[in-house]
Length: 211
Image (cartoon, rainbow, N blue to C red; front, side):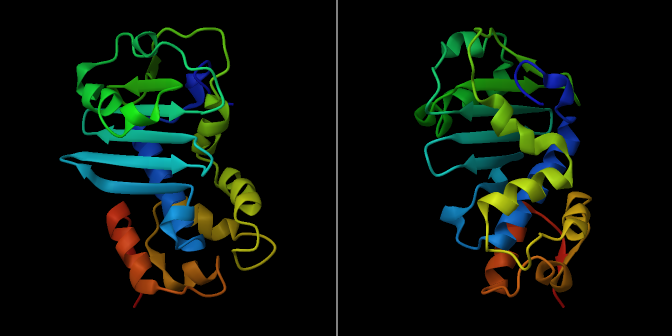
């Protein structure tokens, strides 16, 4: 499983961005109320910055920042011991300072921090031998559509079309296929607000065609 102690399974930066967009699109389809979603993606977080936000509703959060020349992950698990942030961020490249030490991350907190300025080669700072919940938070990022199916089947129980979420459609979204109405309606029985979904897709910067 992916964790701060096993970064070899974490996808390369470009693949990670694709996965983050896919799970945010799927959350936007299954749960149109933003405040109840687990994953959301803002393709205009800042100038040349994109960001995935994960919120579990109980105080745990994860932000993944995508820059043209790097990527950084900040995770916060409220029930876990907080390590010294200066150690967690030891040797952190300065391009991530505003993200890691600025808002909203500064107010949320940091249980683990991961970064890279290369296509892969993920790095961490100085880790103490304590649990940081990174395995649970990062597991969704393995690139396997079935991982999302298994998670969403439990988390969004009753919010999708049938007893099983359409793995075929999810695989297409993971591959970046243009989203169609048919694909949406293979996941949910009906969509309350198509214009809202379009707004979400534009924010995510994910292709769609609802004509």
